[in-house]
Image (cartoon, rainbow, N blue to C red):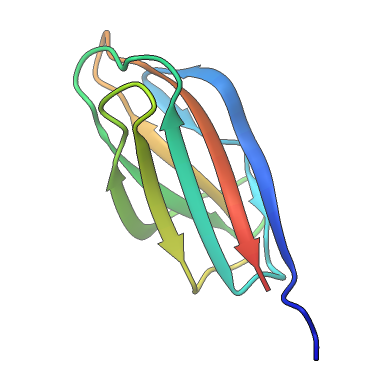
Length: 112
């Protein structure tokens, strides 16, 4: 019997997001399941935007995958995005209104 292969990767740590923001890309083609957790490390400022998952064939050119989520609205709030059909490269992105921001921790949990 084979044990499932899994990994937790810290993608973004203590980064202040404002304007157009995105996590670092992560190569995850071996995985069958992926879950992003986006946590607000400080109280968000301004309007809380929607976030979305992006996929890429090469880690440089991105398209929206279709999964959307509300960014965390309070300190230690957590947003979640689950995927089970994706290509090789993954990231999450968002767009904050002028003056809005959030300091985030983004982790990616992958399972073969």
